[in-house]
Image (cartoon, rainbow, N blue to C red; front, side, top):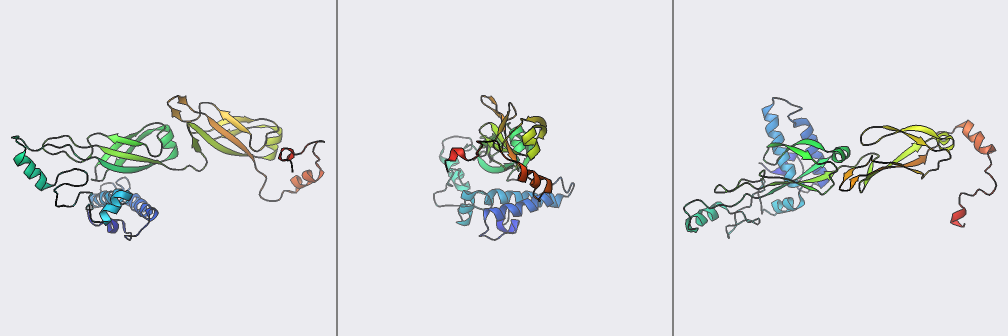
Length: 284
């Protein structure tokens, strides 16, 4: 691979966000699904993916910038004949083979490789399969477990660097980052959601549609509901070790953004029942 910064078209001092934006733009344009049959685009896609995998890993990027590893993540030659991860250089393998006392070649398991993968919120909660391109350009179908969390590492056995002397390959370790959602928020195995409702729905009660991970459902808003009232939808959360969580729907009364003359006239004439004070508990 060439210089990973040049491959992504970013400066050496680019921020992590600039690197991510550059990769997403290139990957969207070069992905094999977008350019079927374009071998040149597919090859470029593999290179920019490998560049992103290196530069998005803060430790690997720092080591590359210091000249400790090359653009493919391989250890650069050092005087002691070993890389930082314990993988032998070619000279190390040569001398080990000569003095090991075995007739066969020196055997050592391949080094594990690490990658990062962003997964959509609903995709992470529901699980599924996702095709990913590894650093060497190889495409794999990755099983996303239902309920996967940010920071969780998925292990693909035998998909790391090749072993030496017939030893097995290392593993590929894929660290998951779950993307934020516009209105769902995970809390343990529960899903929280703020649901806007109108004033008359809050006062009179109503049946309203509520989005959930598995699609919209109809929910009854009780009469005289307030902002902050929480409705529990059992079993509509994320699958966990102790079963599936719930979805907690917090009602939020929304008034029209533009002035409504009829609502203003109602507010001017309405008087609360005697003794009603919404700030009574605040003792002010």
